[in-house]
Amino acid sequence: MTWNPLKKKESAQEPVEEAAEQPAKPVRKDRTKNAPTPKMKQAQAAGVRPLVPTDRKASAKAAKAKMRERENAEYEAMQKGDINHMPKAERLPWRIYIRDYVDARFNIGEFFIPVAFVILIASMIITSVAQNQTASMIMMLLMYAYLIAVVIDVWLMWRKLKKKLVAKYGERAVAKGSRSASYAWSRAIQMRRWRLPKPREPKRGHFPE
Image (cartoon, rainbow, N blue to C red; front, side, top):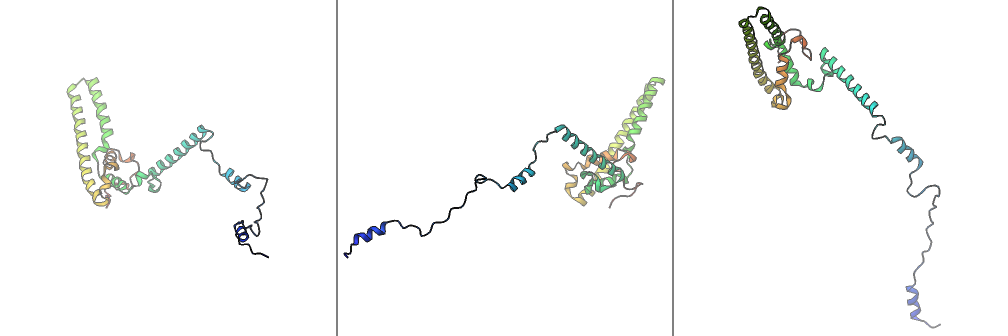
């Protein structure tokens, strides 16, 4: 047998077949490629929720009723003095301090509404019945004098209260966004029995520490 070097070279260039082919994976004909299993479909269908409610009127009515119920609960808490269920703004520590301080002092302005009403009625009677312009002018001057006294009393009250708030709670308690000044003034010119939240002490003189 004659040895041929070219024959060995040609056999080396021929592709080598794989010894064993990998068995092909069976393809299921009952579902398409990448399709989710029935369990996943059921889970997705159960988790679907509409972004927009089908009945907007009913949804808005339910939300309004829920808000009214919450407001009624908060109003009742302010009447009873239940701090834990009051609105968040009324639960702030410096607002509680403001209420206790204003309720503890005698405020000239808390009688402003009844005094103004009496002076106004008296002035109208004097003007229409007695037709005494001098007496009517005196009544109006008394009205303005009382109003000036209320403003001065409230200003002195806030000046002292502001120092106490800064010393106890810092500048955040008297910042513009806190509205502490208007909150104190509005409470000081209200009659004690009409204030909400209700005063925690039945009588004046119990100043907070």
